[in-house]
Length: 458
Image (cartoon, rainbow, N blue to C red):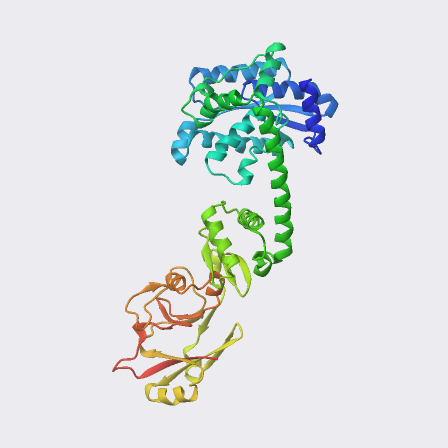
């Protein structure tokens, strides 16, 4: 019996483990109505409470309201608490520039997840074997990965699908034989949607070629799901093995991994940092790891970078602007006449104001260290020895143009983490000197220069 098949699925796959409430996504179609019916029959055996959720997408005029009323009446008749919502999906999709199907799915799951937290429940959907086959074909023609070919998973996080191995034909037959009413969604008959074309045109052809198509697809999906789970397990093990600490991984371990495992490791790293899995990014990262490209850097988002340095791969979250200027030292002009030393990250910086005539003496004395000098008379206001912040710009001597420090760092492939190790000298208006580079052309010596500020780094 089909109900026993669902019972077996729940037990074997541990679908209701540790939960006493189930929130069912109820559209009113045969799949979701049958799911509510079956779980309502089994609720005492599994000691669970049943709740239902319905979303009126306002896409089909009067028909949408008829569906809503049908679901409401069904739940009242069967004493099931219903949470019903209305959302104008077409308007929201237009606002966010997304497809109607995608937008509808996002909104449904957003509301479901919030309700699930409120009820402390599992979310059950009516996805069945036929849906999984359609998704497999749909993902195949899109060139999906093995994970995509696994189609709709039996369970994912808080979502369960007790009908995963039951066909649409079996469900409709049961409903018709037992006089269980359901709605036929007119949009499911429209061939303008790709999934509907697959359901209405492709699958019938496949069944004509082989009547055992659904059974064979079921076996195939189970097999590749098991393979994918095994590869994912290996990826997690190797990811943990390579982890030095949070967001830092040993590239020597990762570079030795076979491509299917490395791909999953990189995907896991991206997902852990809330970065969408983009295969162009994955290919770039994979190539850099395999070839151990030192100084490789890739911008994953506006705030997150991935880079390779000294045989390690790092994920860096650039600090918000308000937190960047956490090292700033004001230089007292009286101290500069005698000379001021500042220790920063194991490097000593010496600042002193001298007469122009003394430059040759100091250059000779400090010829084996980094030595810079600039026109002190052109400096207005207080001086600050600090880290860079967004918006800083400099016209580096000899380059003939003003650029942001960010652009200079990008052009010189300086990874985000190292940028905060490069101090600058500035007044309240502009950057005067950028360590590792040079002084600003605005402060170069000219015929009127009397006093110079020297910067010595050792």
